Image 1 (tube, rainbow, N blue to C red):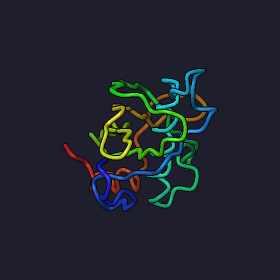
Image 2 (image 1 turned 90 degrees about the vertical axis):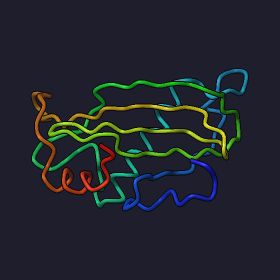
Image 3 (image 1 turned 90 degrees about the horizontal axis):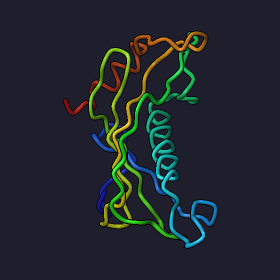
Length: 146
C-alpha cells in the first residue's frame, strides 16, 4: 500500500498494519527469511478480523476454526533488517465455507511481496468444512471485490 493511504479502517476495502523487521525475522545476511512474509500476512489477517470485534479470530464460536487452506506467494523484492513494512489485507472472494484474502507487503511505495491466501472454516473436532458464521459472512460480504 503506498504511503499516505488509510490502512486501518475495516470499513474500507483494504486494511493494513505496520511491521518492523527484527533480527529474528532475517537470515544470516540480514534479509527477511521467505516464510516470515507469511507470518506478517497472518498478523494482518488476524488484526483485520479483530477490527470487526473477533477477539480470537482463528477460534470461532460453536467449535469452529479458521485455518489456512492454501497460499500462493510471489516475492518481488527483499525486506531487510530494521525496515518498517506495511502489510495489507483485502477480501478477494468470499464463499460459503472460505475466504480468499489478497495480501501485500510494502516498504514505503515499493511492493515487496504479494499473497493470495484461502482461509477455510472447519469444525475443531473433525476439521471438516463448515459454513462461515452468518455474522462474519455478512460483515465480510460488504467488502468483497467479486
